[in-house]
Picture 1 (cartoon, rainbow, N blue to C red):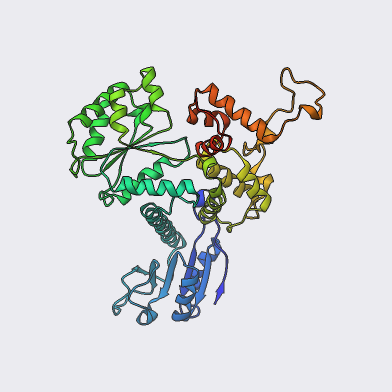
Picture 2 (cartoon, rainbow, N blue to C red):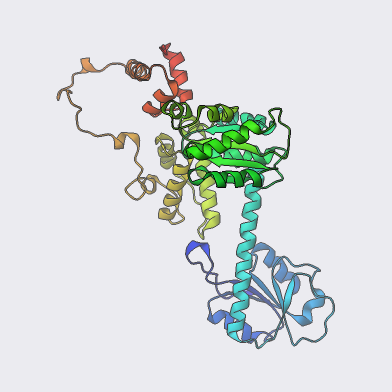
Length: 440
């Protein structure tokens, strides 16, 4: 058995060439083999059925071309698209996966079209496998990677939300995974066997809202960025929520899950969001933690993203250097998991399949820099040029003073203070207890 050429790839992971197994007696398919080789396809020739199928299990082909004289030796079902090579004489029963028969002297153009179809089928099978894996991950919660206390608490809250028919409001910064959390709730709920209905609120007029509510009559309606809902559409949703039965349990009514990256009470205070709608959405609130609140998960998330990058591309799964992992855990990640994924995908491309180091994560092509490198080195207004040792205060004392200033500036609003400081609320609460700070 000999391999002529390896399969190549072009942009967007679409193969430019295919991998073909030709199982035939010596010389029986020479014209076909020559045509495939001339176009750069990967050809594996074999005369032994058992050996060829064993090799196919290790490296799946896009297409099997088998001499019809060997059909009696084939199993009832083959896992790959299969064509018989022959003159069309009556044959015993052929494998169910067999697509048909081609002549040994098939024109190269026709053979190319057949192979193109096989490559497309392979791509569809891979996509279906990815979607099935993703669905299983959403259903069992493993798609939300992490073992930190914050993510374990979130999993517990999502399970309780799935057990209820109550309206869920998922709050969190952009890129934290609110849409994924919503799908976990849906898939774990009694409506999980139904397809979720998704509505983008920034472009939802009243007609679109009514249509979405109708389509979601026996499933879940996910309203993404509900803070962008136009005023007229807010009125439609309020009317629906008022008219629906309050006792719950009616499977014909849509289950409402809404996401927002805004602080809705502030929008209510400004008159940009209806107060009655806010209270009807705020039945089961869930706050999705920021990436800085789950720093312990960054290594796991980075490895998972890198594995997906390798699976979708042509290069092997690489690894992060120790320096790169330290950098990943030190960055502020204002864009949260979404920003982390974009940075790793760029770094994977820059590394070319090799180990990912700091240099691949930093620089103008990624837009990332550690906190110390993003700060200006120029002295602030009023700073003295010559700083003496007496002017240096203990770190904890400086930290306590900074936290106190943030809490006073926000009048005890922990969420806003944490945003200003660029840290997670859980971290700020811990510091408040550590330093015994007052909230008002």
